[in-house]
Length: 226
Image (cartoon, rainbow, N blue to C red; front, side, top):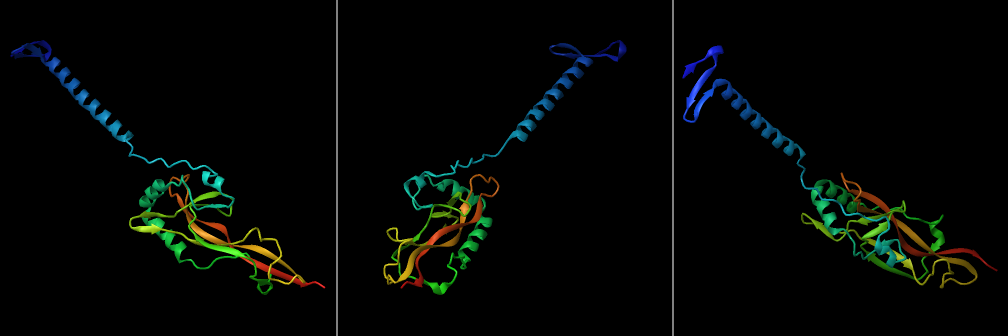
């Protein structure tokens, strides 16, 4: 090793002499490359996003409504079962709390006549217990109703009892009431609350909404006619 002017030092390697300032430059370049690599890794890490499940687009008017004149669907080939179960698993505790609230509820609001003593059930009707997959809520919007799906061992089933006047009986005279009385068959409704799935809500796509369904075919008897 030899000393040179201005404190420059020459190191003798097998490949030849190397000045000290050249070693410093190589060291700085090496550290720069390390820092650059760390920066690239950090940027890539910050830009990484966990896989996201894009909810299925739901049209305002579902295809199942084309096959019925009713405001609910009992069959639905486009029912988003996969998306519903995915979100049920994701929001398990919060959804269970909502579902228990719906199941435990027994009081319902009913459309009634002005006086209950005025009505007599003398009109033909059909009664059934249904599990709607979609229905129109009281705001006129079609909604996906949570039905026939399972999450973490909990089966989500929501039933409703409906009773409809037979053969367009609504509005016609009650068949068992004497013609000397004014009478009319009336389709009455009841309000049900269902747990629904809203794919447009990315934070918590579940809610309890109100739906109006047929409850009975009642006979209204009016004044006696001479």
